[in-house]
Image 1 (cartoon, rainbow, N blue to C red):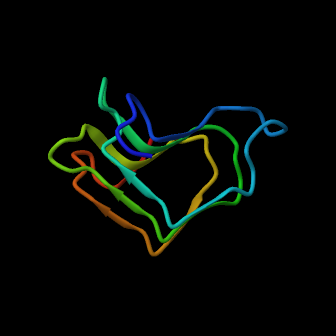
Image 2: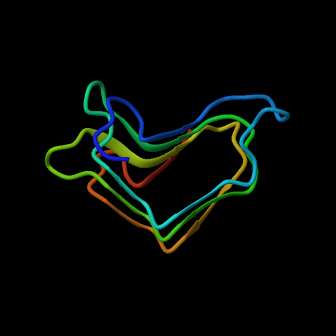
Length: 97
């Protein structure tokens, strides 16, 4: 996911029955998203459980407006991170709100 107008990957705020449980994102490049109005590499909101981000490159370069590698809403379950490379984000790599 490179240079999307908003967020690169969005896990919406769905109820538990409709949430995207047990998703894994492995060996991806997520870069410079939020080109129109700012955004995040991953935006996680809602009830998705067992989410894994592994061996990804999540970065913002001088050309991008990606504010953080991963945004996790306060109502979302924990996300598991393994061996990701994150860089260049004005708000830091992982934002928990």
